[in-house]
Every structure is written in structure tokens, then in C-alpha cells.
Amino acid sequence: MEILKVQNLSKTYGKEEVKVEALKDVSFSLEKGEFAAVVGESGSGKSTLLNCIGALDTPTSGTITIDGQNLFSMKEEQRTIYRRRNIGFIFQSFQLVSELNVEQNIMFPLLLDYKKPDSAEVGEILNLLGLTDRRRHLPSQLSGGQQQRVAIGRALITKPKLILADEPTGNLDSKNSQDVMDLLTKAARHYQQTILMITHNNNLTASADRVFHVSDGVLMDLGGNINEKLS
Image (tube, rainbow, N blue to C red; front, side):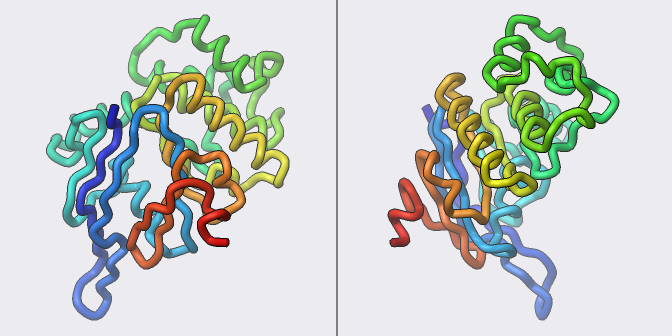
């Protein structure tokens, strides 16, 4: 089942002498439950790609379809609601609400949408992420790795069609980075969750089902483990 379809996506900033082509005719698709990684150097276009797919930026041309819905054929308000309900975000900087405890941070997207959290589902996510004994802790009482686990839980709770992870291990040491990768892989398998992650670290792609490489706005599908492809 196809969850994400990107067709002929281009993004240009500026005009004439200051024109920058951040994305150039990018096309690919992801199936339900796929965990894909996008790698590339800083400035390659990978963050622009993620921002367009997440409807945080508007492409110059091309289409982005999530579960059959064309994101940019919607009106802005409709797109904002669709994004909140169908796209989960995991950021490098965690972006937790400091006044809320672990459990409340995880439930926060549902509360924003005036939905009542299912306590069993919250408990299952806490257990999956190894946070059951930390459910009443504030973010300031957690390690960086634990905070990122909360962010993963917050992305999972709405059962989104797609999770976008923006350098999710960027602020973590190597052990916590691997723990986060293991949890993302576990989420993809356990919930049949489709995940698209960007990273500059090729070593973090071993768990991914597919790896894409972006360079100067051009995307290439490398298939499986990037280290095997580039060796």
C-alpha cells in the first residue's frame, strides 16, 4: 500500500543571479511500514525535501501525495489540519513542552486536536519506548536519549500516515543514537509505521529498508544499506 508519492518535485529559492535550485525534479514513493533514510551533506537539499513533504514549505513545482491526498491541492487551513492528524514529526532538538511530564508530552498532539487519549495505547507506547517508570518525569529530569524517546512517542500517538524524522540523533552520543535508531525500526515493525528520516551520518542507515542520497538537489535511490552501496 503506497503511503507517500513524490512526483517531479522542485524547489527554487530566489531569482536570476541569486537563484538556488534546492530540489531538482525529485520523484520516489514509500509503501506502508517502510523505514527510509535520506542522506546527504549539509546544503544538499535533504531538509528542504523533508519540509516540503511535511507541508512546512511549499514546492515550486511537482506533487506530494500522502495516502492518496494531494497536499498542495488543499487550502492552507485544510492542509494544516491534515498535517496535524496524518504527519508525525521528530526533531533534532526534541521540542518537548517543559511544563508537561513524559505522559502529557506524548498525549499532547491528541489534546491539541480535542481527542481523548486511550490510556491503553499511551501505556503501550510508554512500554515500547522503555519509559513506563519515567511517565511522571519532566523533560528537565530526563537524559537527551530519554527526551528523544518521548518525542518518538509523541509522533506515534496520533497513528500518523507518515513520520518525518529530522536528524533525530543529531544531539545524541553514539550509544543513544543507536538506541533511537533501534526504536524507530521497532516502531516501523510494530505499528507498520512509515518513516522517512534525514541524516548526514551514513552509519545510521543500516536499519533502514531503503536509502536515498541527495546531492545538489538531485535524489538517487540507493536501495539498502548505504555503506554496502558506497564501498
